[in-house]
Length: 95
Image: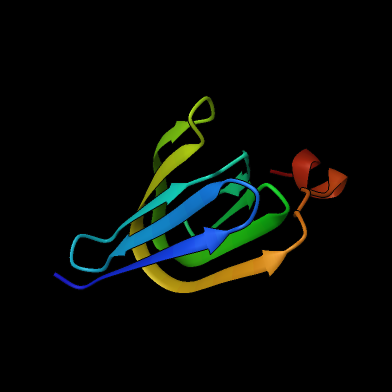
């Protein structure tokens, strides 16, 4: 089983586990989900954002009380950026 685990050191402990064999991504530390569709998922982790692109992307579970999220799908790119992403008003209207 090929798996990548990384600890993100900011204010609270955050982890990202990627299981390539089962196409599962488990993220601890999600503060809110900005956008989710079949091709892209954008989520905030406090003062940072995650942008995940791929195919058949699906949020399997989201627990905002414990800040956990499980995503399935075929991962193409994974971006971890400083700052939070907000969905534009136009994108909200035409979604």
